[in-house]
Length: 261
Image: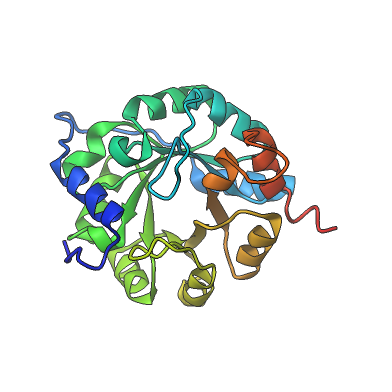
């Protein structure tokens, strides 16, 4: 793994914790729900494909939501979410493998495991339909990508710039997420996605991540080429009049292209 000296302290701490966590003894064999078909259904229904995230807290938030994860996920799906993302990192995001299991039982859409997966054993912690691999933090991305696919996972490879994008594409990634959050300052800039998106091949599913708070943000990312968008904080605790109503917060994003008045 590359040096972490230029990372924000919370990110360094997360990586250290991830490196210390063990994996499972048994190798998983996952029968995944199709992410591509879920995107197609959303588009056919006139919904923006939104990956809604069950995120109790984060290093960039001073608030914690202790709602039942399965209940939150059902409300997000009722609001039109195409996929549910579940944090399983326990120390900094308040997530758990149990939360993901409960969510995947509660909903019938694909579920993404959001965590810092650094080695093959980490893949076997819990079944999901998709798993996140962060290009910057994986030494052998092609090897870990292959190991995840061998287990049945669909794989979202996260990048932050064009160099990481090239690494992801060379490793064989076919679902790429561009994270708008800078890992050194933890600041968000939607121009990050706009600068990387033109260099993503048409046959790669492209996801915009982080900083998507309003319908205008949704439309901006879609105009820049996003096939889907991942939103967490805006859904879990939006600052507007909906006041934490995850169904309403999800709906205002999934209907962003229908409601342009």
